[in-house]
Length: 62
Figure (cartoon, rainbow, N blue to C red):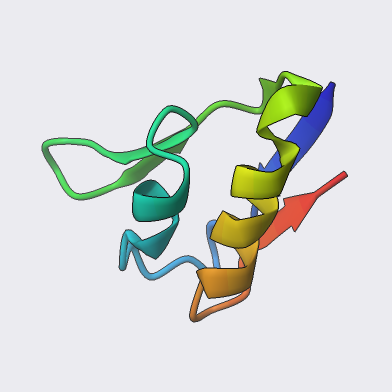
């Protein structure tokens, strides 16, 4: 399993992560980020891409 953590103090809700892994990250109707905290290992590459494109570097992938 891939463990995902988002530092919500750093996150500015730009939503770039949503474009890379829309099944893991989403902005809700209020513009707040929602995300899955664990994902299948097969999703690792897209989740790591999402972390890489985050302008605030708020996403940690383990």
